[in-house]
Length: 111
Image 1 (cartoon, rainbow, N blue to C red):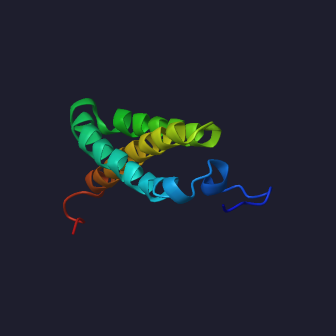
Image 2 (image 1 turned 90 degrees about the vertical axis):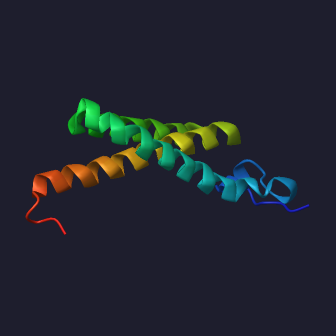
């Protein structure tokens, strides 16, 4: 059995993700990008219907809630949910920022 020293503050050490549960570590990236996918899909149409500013602020708030939850997560499941929420917010935020900036820039300056 592998043991970690008492000063290790990693995901693997925190929730003992070794041996049988070691596949949960790369799964977090998949969960994040799954949230990213849903964030882009959901907030793309939301921004078109409700406006860029409202969508921008909501996506920022969702992203911050996900980050806060990941900081205080007591278990792997809560941390994975927080990563999904963070990915959702990041995907929405990135899309809205890109589209909003291209609208501000104007059609003459777009490539």
